[in-house]
Image (cartoon, rainbow, N blue to C red; front, side, top):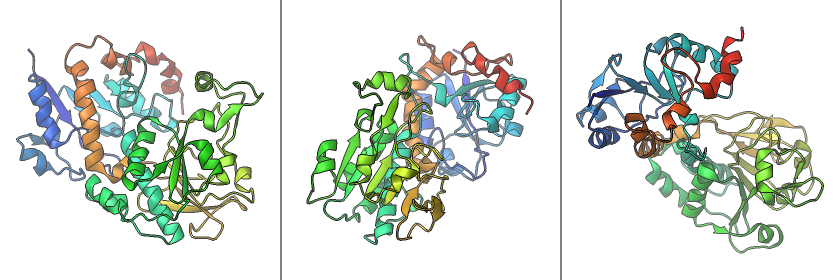
Length: 406
């Protein structure tokens, strides 16, 4: 059996990303499970796991990884760092025709690189296999409670990026002390929404159904987790069809304004399509009965379905205020402001835990197809390009994107 050399590349994006596709222990696990694979790690001074953590486990750390057959990272690779005629696996942010990465995909084609994009790795039923969504949900929801404590002077949590790991973050959550009848509403399930639920569970919040949330008073803090039919309806009053809504949101209206009148905090974990109406608008937020004071917008669609999310925030400065009256950004402590958390790279705040979670999926779900038989064509269907410098058939729609003279 031919040896496959797998190289973990250093992250070159600015600002630097501390995550890795495989932890040191997982590198050894790969070589145990797939004896034909040798793992090499490109030296880096930005990783959450230092070079020494790899070398201590016998993983070779090298400057030059051009001898490797397959190169894997996390974020986009800088064009000048691409090695021709290799297989690469990373988040390229190109398959939606993102303008800012047009030149990257052009370079990949010119250098005859096979690009396997994590975001397009899908099961036979088209469900996504891998991503950092769980830790986006965990960190984003934690940040929501951090914001709520600061906004109302209730408690202070250490920023997630200052926690050593998930264990310390869980310890910080013990400080959360919410008044009776504090009401928190969440939208979206999947990896992100279920990650947020892990935080609700850690705090010990009671879950109630949407009707009780809207109509009842509680002697403790509660949350409700909405399905799409709980906050969208057919515009003509006919029966709501969830699957038809997922196909297209046209002909639907939002009913979320009901929750604005009773919810203190909103945790947004949904996937939103441009065909759907906004969840709530700027006009909705001007209603005198609006009670919402904190929004943790993990989905982070700017100027989109969550009207107070007018820009992304950063790990260093995760919060800003939105004044519903002026529709402008203000200090998040301002009296009538909605405090917004809209960090768009949340998993980077817990890089070790997020990396371990990601690597475990790589090993269990992706690598068997990458290094062996692939009856479901997982790798082929996720490959945007091939080693001949061509777009793969499933991505032929990108031809105009890469050829556009911009």
